[in-house]
Image (cartoon, rainbow, N blue to C red; front, side, top):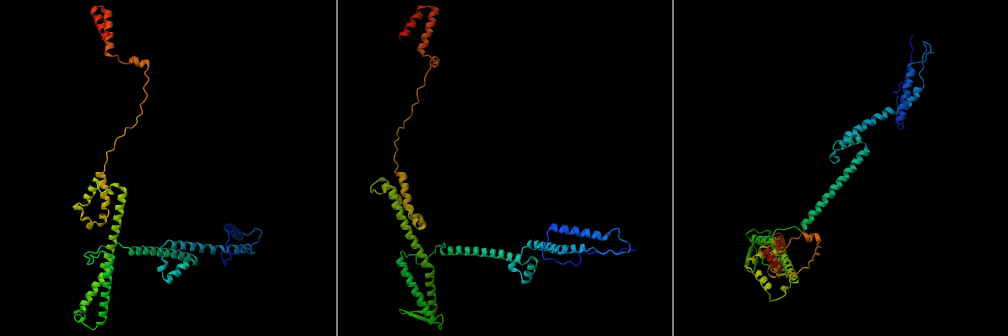
Length: 361
């Protein structure tokens, strides 16, 4: 005989539910499922052989509670592992293709990709801001660059702003004249005469060379000389301000006939200082002030009378009788004591005579 037992499978025909359950509910559901399966496998003893044991309806009820747990937990764990693997790698959203972005979105989810894109956009904005700041610093440096001095400037003889402005006007006129002549001489060859000025003929090539020189003067030589004139004027103003300051600090510079001033003027006329203005123009503007203080230090010294400083006399020490008894006796007192002792021992007249003579001396 056989006993046929019909049991309900806890994992069959599982349907997802609309919400997740807590861990305590999951444990309770699993206990009910296991207990229901055991009861189905071990039927009660009062049942007779040959009878069919019908399956208990309780596991079916439990089945509905257990169904959502298995399929809901495993995909979440798998998804978390995939996200951790993807996030552990360096991902460059800017250089990824469309298919790679789609695959990444499937692994991470739309929210993670959106957050990733937001952080990438912030980083890109910060980099753009940094580049803008660098460009601003470069522009400021270009506005006031430290330009090297132009050597062999043909306009170095210009000493005033009026002379410089006159030369600038002249150069601009030459450039305009050359451009006008060349525009009208496009059909001429380089060695053909293109202009006649005051009876002198100029070929097309000579006019081009004249225009190049004029442009070089306008763009290089004249601006360089303008800076030199400006610096020279600043040095003159600075030198005068130092001279006025030295007159306030050193009164002997106001007098016309004094030894210190004569020494100072002799130092200024030293032959060794004549080339300083050309070699070191910035130092030359400060030289009179420096030499004035040097002359004052060397030739304007006055002997300082030493004034007696008051001293505090310490109080005289108090000499006690013990101290007085310990002081050494004078020679005369010692000699008197010796003669007195000798006279007492000998009783001779000669010792008495010496004692009386020493007492009256």
